[in-house]
Length: 465
Image (spheres, rainbow, N blue to C red):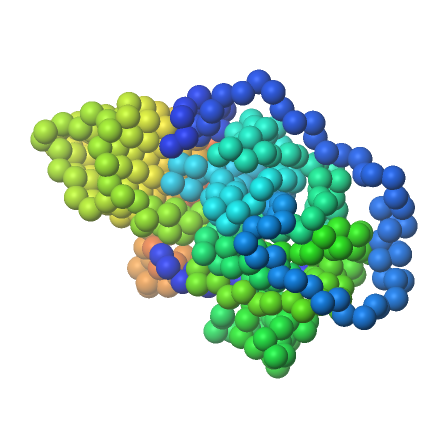
């Protein structure tokens, strides 16, 4: 199945701390649940995939919708992917662990599942999986967390199948690199079996739900004549029986598709479409920027850190304990200044901006609508706009980021070797971990700087490096 709709569909734009390598705060713990790898005694996975298509279709089951949390609903959160479209940011950090309002992207999904009543979280991990495990531990917000490993990236159904030893009753499947309208996840659980969808203007570009009499009758990939404008948003609530239907054969593109599992559930049950008001598939760097715009817009301002009397803060601004805002600083929220960060003097921070833990923003620096990750330093007299800076980046004094083309066309960015439109009129640079720019460097719009890349003093950079 092709990827669900991305940033164009976005409808709206704590924990006690022991710091981990991710730069996020979580409670400390030494114990870890065992990784769920093997399966219970049953057909081998390949044989089960063949058998999954040969089982005769039975009479449609009358299913009592899951209501009132009277069954033990688990949520499977998929966090195993390498996130190649998110590079250079995902070169050393799994995409679900990238910062969204200084919490991992996946934490927002897990929170939505817990708020909807999930009794247990099953995280499917793979690439840099220990980073995920270190953050969530064996328990998160008082809810048990278990882990399953997807050894190879072989499709969504394969990822959920890896989690099947942990599943007994009804279960939900959520993508750890998606942001969901939390209220819709609650409705998804209530309506089980159900599929989340979102209304789109161009359904021909997506997998589209077909419906009849209020139930889902199928999912059609990029149809010439879409039956509805409801695009599949990739969130599902399955009955317990679906556990036995996960081992589907590989599709023509070599992946085990979750839509094949959905098709079997549709054969057996009445499946409810649940419409999302807000949703974002965070697959590429500018979508990480959009994710931060979404969640920073929900901030409620508070000052726990050290803010100079000569600083000016307006709008929703959070200054965490241990952060410092120097004299002459102006911050126009929404903005989050994280623990250990230092801003100023005379710096200007505006728009939806995240200043990560232990970041340093120097004298007379302007940061606009950007993500500045953990440990990054932006030296004096620099301008950073509509950009994402990875961890431990060192921006030399006087570095300027251009974020707008003279012809006002949308900015393009390199994804897996191809230049693609970001759909944004303003977009600056994406710098991987450890990038260093020389003093007075000029960076043109849409640049991709790989982890560890450097620039010379006074250089104007017009091509990726």
